[in-house]
Amino acid sequence: MKELVIDVLEKASYLMELAGENFFKIRAFRNAIRALQMSNAEFDAVVAADGLREIPGIGAGIEEVILSIVKTGTADIYETLQQRVPIGLLELFKIPGLGAKRIRRLHEELDITNLGELEYACEENRLLTLPGFGEKSQANILKGISELNSYKGSFLYPTAYAAAQELLAEIRLLRPFRCELTGALRRAVEIVGQIEILAAGISPKQILSEPNIFLLEPKEEKNTITGQTRGGIPVILHFSDAARWGTDLILTTGNKLHLDYLLSLAKTKSASTNQPYLPEKPEEADVYNELGLDFILPELREGLFEVPSDEGRKVSFPQLVTHADFKGVFHVHTTYSDGIATLEEISQHGRTLGYSYVGIADHSQSAFYANGLKRDDLLRQMAEIGQINAENPDITLLKGLEVDILSDGSLDCDDNLLKKLDYVIASVHSNFRMSEKDMTNRVIKALSNPHVTMLGHPTGRLLLARRPYPIDLDKVIEACHKYQVAIEINASPRRLDLDWRWARKAYEKGVMLVVNPDAHRLAGFAHTQYGINAARKAGLPKNALLNTRELGEFKWKN
DNA sequence: GCCGTTTTCGGCCCGACTGTTTTCAGTCG
Image 1 (cartoon, helix red, strand yellow):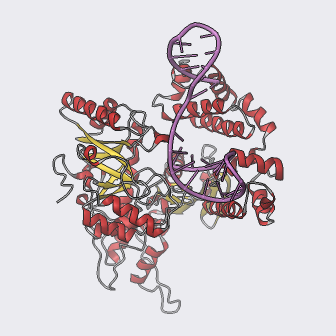
Image 2 (cartoon, rainbow, N blue to C red):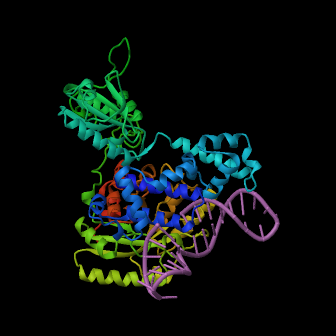
Image 3 (tube, helix red, strand yellow):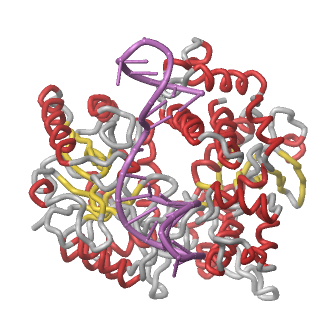
């Protein structure tokens, strides 16, 4: 319900911008949305207890709107706005460089009402006729549209995973012999195109006739059922049986390169067809054993690190890192900058999670948009951390800072202050459009500062939203090794940056890695698991991650 | 529209960059 409310409020706020409503009214809506997103309280319970007004940012007006959405699924203000502004214009906000004012002009002067019409107008050079729009704007818009199109049909891991778990639970109620998640989700890939599930001891017919299993446009085909979830995520249900469960689980888990590798080790089925095949076995491990391999974890099956470069040699992995190995996490934002949890709450939460330390790292001063910490704020925060630590001997909050790397590679905080901190994360948050060479030099210069202990989200990518900025990661990794700086695997499911493919390279070069939740609220601590998934995909053992060190075992610099 | 008072109306986050201008509006983080 909370998701629906936020969705309607968000759309309404964008429509208000396009309708030219009062700027501060729009901001009030945005603040209310943020307050709802950040609220840890159970939304339905708050509504039931008539407690919406107690959330700061929600007053009488927005309360009424929310209650209407809860009751009817929509609100008058939203319906009225839709009469005034074409809803298709909302997509245009996703194009970099387009905001409300320019979108409004595209609508009023070129009669554009959706993404398709805008693309067509660009192709006909009609944007050039508008004052304020030039060739570069038009080219950038076209580029933005083609990027958006390339994201279609892709879903972030957590979105697909949550929907898949729901579906799995519904199917398991029918008591199949076995039923498991498979495909890219089982391999914990950060972006997936579909949900795949393998079931045994149940027929397609049984599933199709079960009213509680929701599938949009279900189709039965060649021993599979395809369809979509409510959220429009494509689903494939595969069917197997007990005798060849292991084989089918491997075949559906993939990926193709991994299967090609397995097939290259397999026998040919018959001399006449010359087709290799995987042995039919009830368990996955039996198949691998038959091929002369140890069991390979699903996360590693990408046809990359698990495949030996020299034919005939076996690759073996050490025990991969798990959350149980974690002693603590770093990179947590608080109410001092743009987080919503207090230091006290974070300390308590860290203890609940069984951590012995939690690293605080708010934004530095130049991050105005995030209420970055000025010198005095930082000193005040450090004092408060000292106090909380004194009162809670079993968990330690570490004094840190996520300092902005400025355009020239200098840091947004002076060295005298930095040296007072337990650790420092350096991150790029501005001026992304630099040449690869300049960006690489910028970051390496920041790494050379002796107080920097970690490099934050090294490529700035936002999955399905923003491409990484150009940067020579080989050189950056080399510099991290030289200056003894750890590289962050940012566990936000939208970032997962450093990418696991590169994390493997950094590990092989002897660079320390660290999974950072980049939490802005208590619930954000749960993102750590996505970062661990990435670390496991990179084949990292416990000792590759700083998080598995005990407090006092950090050796930042030699 | 929300908030907090100087209690019923005034203030509400800022600076850099881009592409377009020819001095600046719009966007972004």
